[in-house]
Length: 223
Image (tube, rainbow, N blue to C red):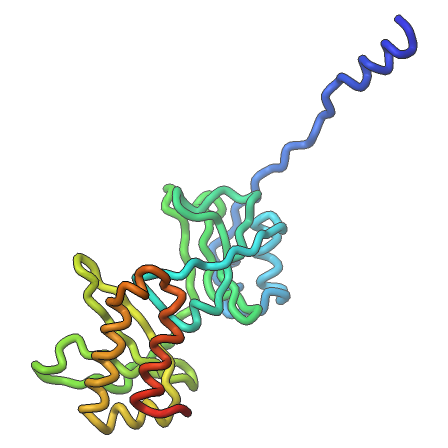
């Protein structure tokens, strides 16, 4: 065997690579402690490390069944080395403004949890309903809710065989205006329903926030 033959034989040998072990299970409390914490906090870092450490950022798709301005500002951190949460979604954490707002993990990663449905932990949104018109003429009327210092119009819309839920921001002055004027409330409600049931929306759900805001501002004024 010549020197070249030996070199070729050595080069032909496959390299052995270490298999990455899936992350070990952790107590559910470990995951719950990360909710509401910055991603660089000790509590969040423990979870990130428990899920394998390496993540891929995934933008959340626009939906025809739901809109929430806070959800629109949220991204998913997927952990490819962790088993998927279920058949539809990866094990991931939801991150908004550099804060952990939800965690979706495989049941195999949570101590004492069996099955394949995954574990979903979420930071409460803290919505407080402050006004909803009452009476037969106001069936399914949207509510005004307060979330922290922000106001939202919480609207359910029939979409054939299913209902969509859409939340639109209001300024404090706009919230006072629609609450004080039933006719204005009806105009805003009807205008938003038309947008949520429009072909434009179903063709491109990304148009909803600006179209809805235009209706609210046109009826209630800006600011």
